[in-house]
Amino acid sequence: MKTYRGFAAVAGCARQTVALLAAALLVGLAGCGGGSGAAASASVPTETPLSAQAALGQKIFSDLSLSASGKQSCATCHSPANAHSPANALAVQLGGPLLSLQGNRSTPSVRYLSTDTAFHFDSEGTPTGGFFWDGRAGSLRDQASHPLLAANEMANASAADVVAKIARASYAAEFTAVFGADIFTRPDDAFDRLKLALQQYQLEDTDFRPFSSKYDEFLRGKVALTDQEARGLALFNNPTKGNCIGCHPSGKAADGSFPLFTDFSFDNLGVPRNTALAQNDDAAFFDLGLCTQPAQAARTDLCGAFKVPSLRNVAERHVFFHNGRFATLKEALTFYVQRDTNPEKWYPLAADGTVKKFDDLPVQFHANVNITEVPYNRKPGDAPALSDAEIDDVIVFLETLSDGYTP
Image (cartoon, rainbow, N blue to C red; front, side, top):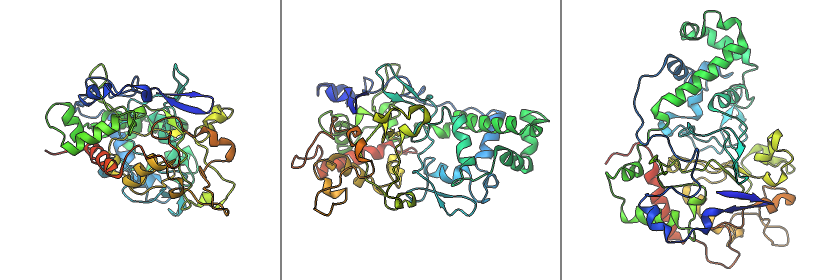
């Protein structure tokens, strides 16, 4: 796990010996960075009928009428057919009354979030947990309200506005049957119950945590990885190569539960500015991530840090990082390993020809960027931690993390 010491994020995984690789490859040990929230509570979800609350949440999740435009639901940006992430290739999604307003950040998947926790600092001082890229929501229940009320998303004027739409919905009678005949006379309570229903749907429906990838079948001992997939896994785990396990544990936990490929921590990668975002037309604007949380405003060492997402279904995504800067997995992984060896490939040049590195952060926060952990501990002229062929091997391994595998 990363421990924030001053401005640098230092990963304990980077100090593992290569001798651990064999054990990690056999998934007999938990990946570094694991612990509470880093692995799923069950490797094979049990299919059970949804509770009345969860069944109601399922209807709410797909209800287009709950947006100001009448054309957007939770499922619009969290498409079940695309691993509960956007099906399009927009860097950020469009919302608002006319579906013409850009969002501020790319839309992450809501799959495999059931074991996440409220934001906190762990025993080593590492910021961990929370929902959204900046960790501002404390639970799935809390998270549900934000898109409904955001002006550039579903754009409802108030909680009462949402409740009035629920009262007109085809499932209004079901809502009162579950939460009380007088629930619509108490808009604040009704809105809270709406959030509860959405949370229960995500917690109970195993579509949100199917564990149905080829890698899951590999962990169950039912299939073997191809030679290239196995090479990719080894590079993924190798602390001197990809070192991906520093934030994305790949092995089963001590209790046998399966990995979620995130430790739910935060990292500052110095991702290049995305000029496709309208908010970035203002040269003075910077999205500072974790330190935009009011409770963390004084922690300037956290400015520029964003939530580490799960890599499950990463090969199904169309854009990468919080600002959607990269459009292919190959480009994103190449940035990881060539950010420091070839910065001119990723950042603009100043008038004198020098590279304007970390251009999406104010200069005073450049020291926050992770430069100590492999593969970020390189300098111009060094060989990247992964060759082009090795990047391809890692991508082939990452494709084994996509749900819906059929032998």
